[in-house]
Structure formats: C-alpha cells, structure tokens
Length: 512
Image (cartoon, rainbow, N blue to C red):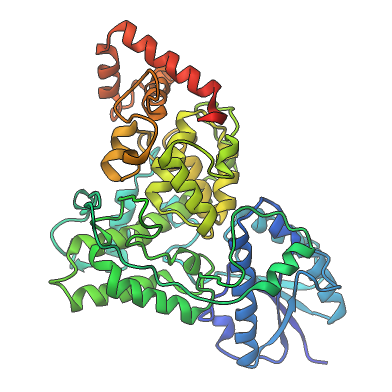
C-alpha cells in the first residue's frame, strides 16, 4: 500500500511557488475546504467571502491541471461537516492517511486549533512555513528583545539592509530612508484620475450557494460583474498595471481622499498578497524594475513610499501580531465601551466623509489606509467605541482583512487600544485634517470651521472632548503636549461649549 500523506491548504495559502508543489507526488492528497467555521466567525463582506471561495476554487483547478491530487470540499458538499478538524479526521479515516502536513496559519486561532488537532492524532504530522513573508513569525520580537517600544522605522531600516532593497552598501539610495514628508499632498481640483483596473466574471451560481446556506454577510455585490482579481495571473496583471500607470503618482497622493474615486493611485494588491497568490518579494521587485527603467517619470518618493508599506509596515504588523497575541486582542487602553452606530453598516450618516468612506467600503469591500485610519477609525476612537466593535467591523468589511493584519492596524494604529505598542500617539484629528486631505468637507451639511453650535462638524468637538477626558493617560506623551497647551489657553466658556456639544453628539450618535 502506498503511504498516503494529507496536506491541508487554507484559504489564504494559495502559493503555487511553495516547495510542496515542486514535484507531483501520487501519494499526496491536498485538501481545500469551504466551511461555515470560516464564513461565520465574524460577519464578512459578501465580496470577501466570494473572493476567497473563487480564489480557492481556481487554485484547486490549477493544482489538478499540474497533476496533483486535490480533494475540494465545497460549502454544499454533502460530506462537509463545516468544521476544519472534523473534515480532516474524516479524510484521514476515509483515505487511510498515514501522515498529515499543514502550513503554519497566519491567524492565531487557527494555529491553536491545528496544534490541538495534531496533539490528538495517532499518525505522524509536520508543519511547514508558508514561504511567503520576508520575515519569520518571531523575527520582529527577537529584533526588539528587551525594548519597551517597537519603533517601525528602525525595523524598516533593518529590513532594507537585510534584504538589500534600494541600498548602496549600508546607505539608502537617495540619501534618506524615508520620503514620507513628500507624500502627503491633497488631490488638486479638476484632477484627471485614472480608472482602476477591474476584472469581470459572472458569479450568480456561487452567490446562490451562499444564499441557500444562509451565510450572513454585509455589503453589496453585482453578481454579474465581480471586479476583483482571484487568480495569480490576474494579480500579476494588476501589479503590471499599478507599476506602469499608478506608481508614478502613488506616493504623492497616497494619503489623499476624494469622493471622485474609490481607488485613486492605490495598487489594490493587498487581497492577492494576503492569500499568497502573489508574493511581496515579486511585487517589490516589479515596482523597483519600473522605477529604475523610468527614473524621470517615477521619483524616489513614489517607490520608497510603496516599499515602506510592504517591506516595512506589512512585515512589522505581522511581527507585532505574533509577538503580542493572544493578549493583544484584549487590550483596551482607554477602557472604551460604546457600540458602533448603526450607520457603520449602511452609510446613512450626514457626515459626508464617513458616508463616503463607509458606502465605498460596502460597495467595494475596500478603502485605502487613510480612509480607514483618519475617517472611520478616527471617528470610532473619538466616540469611545469598544475596540472589539471596531475589530469586528474592520475584519468583516474589507476584502484584505485577515486578523494578523487587521487587529494590529485597528486595535493598535487606529484605536490606540494597545497604549502605544504600534503607534507613538493616538491618530485623531479634527475637521481640519480631513479638509486638508480630501474634498469631503465642501459637500457636507456640517460646518468644518465650527467647534460648537448649529451644524458644527462633530469631529471638532469630539476631538477636544477626547483629549479632555483622557488627559491623565495622554498628557505626558511627548507628541501630544502641544494639544493640551492649546486646550488650556481656550476660555472656560469656550471649553464648556465644546464639551457640551460633544456630549450632545455622543448622545445623538445614531442621528449624526
């Protein structure tokens, strides 16, 4: 009898370049499964569920076309128990499996589940690295060993040196590590914006399966026109499009927001990378190639800004996740307790910035990092929303949201619930920043210039209220001291009006 090995491929492990697939082995059975365990642990955007299922199905077909043995368990498969470990046990018994292998999951809960599962096995087993990231799970923790703060910039520089990315010996090309100061421009009025590269497929059949199984989802979908890339080939096409047409202005306008475009100059490669259809190494290599080929068209600030997001921020967030979980998921530095207002699920708010950012998220399962950080995240923090509430929303609504990258960005960077592990200060702002970086304020019924009174922008009073109520926690932060000096110089009557306005808005949050 041939000794049979069962290999598990999770929905975010679609890496055809993994060593597993170098050789076709007749004694190996691969399993990929669509299960309620994964569709139901949080309420996901329908486009996110579909993107995962479509990508998994295409990946399974690709493996089969190369001669590999693949057992695909569809959501409506009669033998599907909807449990990862139950399905595995059934396959092990049914196919007389003698050895089990899996790739290390990127989510802590799945890591625990598979370790516990393996401890019950009476057969041998082995775990492999996913061979995707620049770093190992605990590389960042080792790098910062003995230090209280995990400064991203120092890790980013270490990564640039270690992997010789945009380096001349020990020095960065261009003489600076970071060109962020050049990448904070607002889009000019009447600016010609590029069309995003979209894909097209009819998904009526798979949408029907979700409906039949009553999978609870959020967001909107056009079943006749699914626009996201879900194969490796499509992601490479999207990468080429970004490098050629969007990279030349990516850095300059990476923080800009506009009601005229939902993607601006962003790559939208995060889903493809996070499910491993395309690697961060090849994304960076392709973009550096384009920059070196067209140095007069693509300035160094454009390419450095993009590389910092992938080689720096993405790897850094993953490192924080594995260094700090599971305790990280319970952190609530400000002891915030409020619920998200209902309009986070339907975009029915009069605040134009929030209406646009949320509606876009519901329509496309996507918003770029500043919309997430300085619009939806900013409001949630100012309003005292419980970090669990914010986590569920972000993890559910975005197509690229997998816990390792979502929770560190949300609970850390966005909500400062970790007390400063990720960010050196809370990222909050009044209307001034939103107006500086977007066109949202000009079409809003609220007045961006008013802190209190009729139609005063809620961000203004909530901003000062946030600092006032958290003074004991924030006053000694060296990056915040100036705000308290400004607050203290205000007249007592003015401060009282602002705080009363904030209290009114918080009490009427559902109708803002």
